[in-house]
Image 1 (cartoon, rainbow, N blue to C red):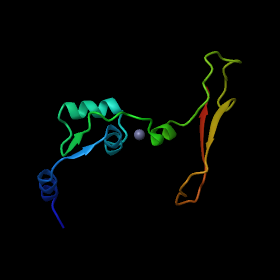
Image 2: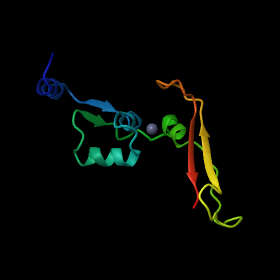
Image 3: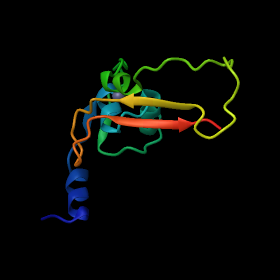
Length: 114
Ligand SMILES: [Zn+2]
């Protein structure tokens, strides 16, 4: 078992790894490519070098995470609800790729308008 200090010392002793901007984007938790470049430029990332010639490409994980949704209309189509429960908006999501402890595959989220 190594202490965090020993792990950091071992990492600092190794030569820096050169990463493309896409690899850096993934390793930093999918931050924006330009934010990753700025972190490198400001010296806030240690142990890696950025391949300055690398070009950012579309990240499939980020695109998937953005999902799709329909635009919300800016103009109300009918009168606003006047009582609790008169109008309920909901969204059903699923099936989940991983089962929860209660084995629910879908998630129902609701917003009551009042
Ligand atoms: Zn990404």
